[in-house]
Length: 270
Length: 282
Image 1 (cartoon, chains in turn purple, cyan):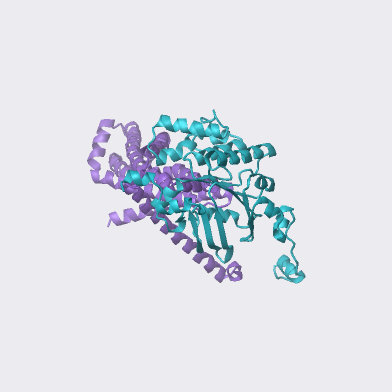
Image 2: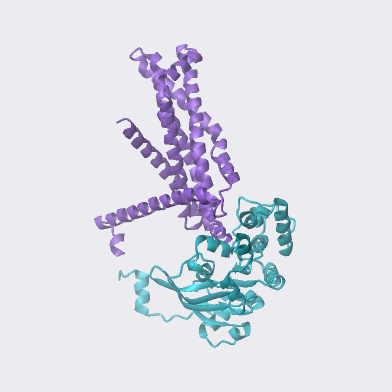
């Protein structure tokens, strides 16, 4: 190990190699969790270990319903911000009235799923990592196993399912609120009625644009849940370890969301 | 055989185990953590209805052995048979079925912090039976009476004292009327009075329900109070298995060190010591 601890190129390569191996291992673990989570959903009843619907609702409340106020505030702000920036930029060309097109497309395809994903990652992804990490160090995961309860079925599948439903729902809500926010500013600044604004919005976007955003948000949901669980399950070292895992889960989830978004945009605009 | 009948009748192997054979049988168990040989060729049999205390210092391998008995670890080699079944060869479904016959009281209680004490205790019933809510509540209250915790079912685990957490963990462990009860450091961190009450509780559980009880502890007083037999582990090896009297009379130096709380004597090689301190710089 003396080689790995030196400060030279070999040490750097060693650290990069180890990080790469750990990363690949975590991706593999996440894939296994996803597979096992779906398996419990399908065969849980047959194995007398059904996924409890009340646990899914409980998670859905925490991930979705309780996040509505903050999603509303942020989406409204994003909508207003886009309207301000759009009008300011388009005024240079005397094309302020075209701002609705920019708001409609950027909100439904980009900003609503992105801001919702980042918010859920910070709020619920971190909570999931902290919860599982704490359960791990207090032997609650072991307790589940010895009681005869599969931890993935009990902890992961409900969170995954709730995330998969609630993140697109929140995204749709963010779509509506951000468009309304943009509309309010446009109506004040340009004197356009809200009715006329929404007519233009509906002309500008197709169902495909909304589905594009919702599809992305479903992928973000899976990423947030899996990254939260993988980091929670790798906790060692007590409370400090839980803190580290939580921070790591948020950073990784937000990074994964932004990178996935870029790949999505690239592939769908070819 | 119908599905209902197969749930009621014990397995063939289990019947054999119940007919005088050991309930738990560890044969040539070896475990490695990386290069470290943690358990070294362990052989141990635990009889029905007995309280076996597994004792040893820190790092002796007793927690690892417990994890093997619970099926949480797979051995490098050797077998662990619980109620006649080789635990490492069971499918997930078979393992779940077997675990319904085992109860575990973890060192820190391992109560689920998001549930009330009552919900914690009812959880195994909720997951493995089709009992109605009212019956489950009654059963939970009965077990809480047994562990002297009646009336606390609506509290959250964070609101309980250390001794109450342990008792709640016992109530959850026995809610399914298990044949085997495992206790990890049941009296660790408790004051002497509460620790003594926990010891009495373990004896009562054995006497009232005829359970086979395996206790992992390093508390000498507790071990000698409750044990029918004691297994002393040291550095991954069994030094002795016997009654408390036999263990006390043992001539094994390591056993006597443990009983008399003497630290292990280490011959220091001065050069190796200096090397360790300086990290080889000098």
